[in-house]
Length: 273
Image (cartoon, rainbow, N blue to C red):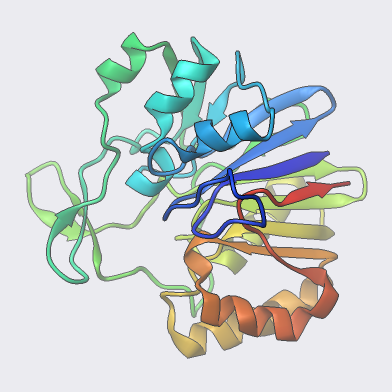
């Protein structure tokens, strides 16, 4: 298995790579290739070219419908050509943020224009095995007492009114390896622990060997971060790679708590198992 981060807020030491507020990661497993999320703009496609990763024909899975994970889809499709795009039926919902002022944060492209470029959408609320041992999680139950909804993230309902977005489209990618589970998070709006527990229930496996991606711990407050760390230590992870919405402060605390098992998972980071 090989993972290469193509879009993230930070960049490793390579002057030709570009960073942005977004996330995208490239996966190779048993001769299968997949792109999970596409970043905000053109950086995923650009960085793939710099790193000599050929995206032609590679399918795409989308963690959720926010612009920083889907905005680069047009640029990616220019590289892939016609290809399958996996996600949730709420992917194209009208999504907004009210942190500073009200602004649109949903996918910046219409479904029709993406389909004209060759996107073949496969949308499901249930877990989808995209390839043997590669599972898009489907909807993740919110069972954790400390991982609640973000009140500043909104969605337009069927009546045209704005309400708190339950972000049912938030999904993770589950790699069901012989040694255990490796989970890739997009933004973990469902909660990092909820996502990991769902991966265990979906596969029937208890062992989680690694987690990488956006954790959203940069937005959850100190209490949530503390309780998440306490829960993470129960998994005895071999790899914990923080990206994107983790934020530098939370990532630094995770680095201190998990030592050499922790990775600042930035653009250009390569993980091989």
